[in-house]
Image (cartoon, rainbow over all chains, first blue to last red; front, top):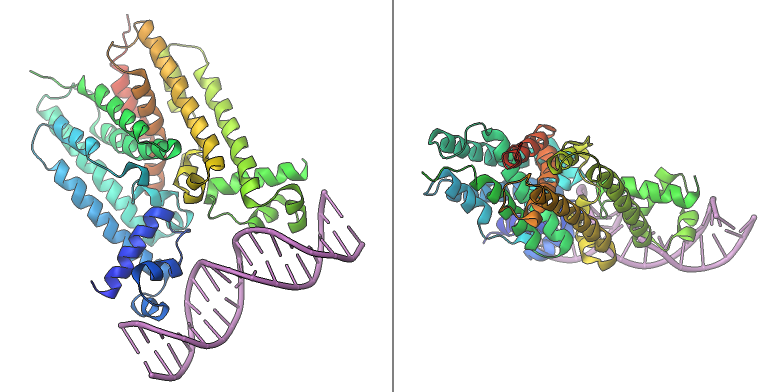
Length: 189
Length: 189
DNA sequence: GTCTATATCGGGATAGAC
DNA sequence: GTCTATCCCGATATAGAC
């Protein structure tokens, strides 16, 4: 792999583990096996490198989620597939995590891909809920955009509960709770 | 207010705004209007001060949430009151935020109050759901602990969505979505 | 109790040799 | 392209005067 690629990948990992504030250029260089000069040759600095990493991480998340949401089955099936997919729960969400970073939120450039990605996810989920409504799969009256927001929030908040307790149990409980509420709105006819 | 109190309060604010990694002793001193020597006289160092701050913030959150959860009304009313309470949404949760801080999660001492507080909240909500089940207010079959986890996760994840988009709308949408699913499990008889 | 001085280290980057 | 040298500043304290 090329040096820029290794630098970006190392930055992706470190942003996930330690956030923007907690990630130093030196740590990036060491993990990438690249020297100081090499890093500053390819990238303007920490913000530049972070942007490249965030963009790549965001694209990866869209790819992963998209596959599940575009998959086969009913609307409920696809939402379930997204919620129940295997995750490294205790590591949290590499995209959502960034919203707790003051420097990321303060930077229009860095926040943009985060907003886009989570916005896309909500939009895609809302479409699926709408499809379910159209098919008569859900009880009329629920609002697609609200259900979509609740689904994404449950996942993002599940990470918080899991990390607080040091166990994935809380994440699973939240997901099951949401699904148990949603399932009763399906029409098995 | 005493100097230690001002130091703790300044630390509470900074931990909320910038997290543990992003908060420096110097910043604390400046916000508290205390000198270097003064801070190190009253507290052993940054971890010690942070612990005092986290404990106090946790107690405050229990106090606030407890009042709403112990309030009047049906189980659904009290859960609604908790979800719909006024919040500084874009600031996020001062307790949940800490779970994204690697140094907090790595420290048994610092993580303990976070775990306790969120655990207490889930437990209290689960009790209320159970009361609702006992009263025949909810459709049988839902699992109190799971619903409780979903409720707390929706709030914590709602903060993430709000901060990502720079708007409180996503938080509100998620909460309304969850309530819309829950309300249909109530028995208005 | 609070102040100032001092110390060490790492963050974040630039400069110029190779 | 990559390396090493160098720079400045802030993070996180300790020491000792007042």
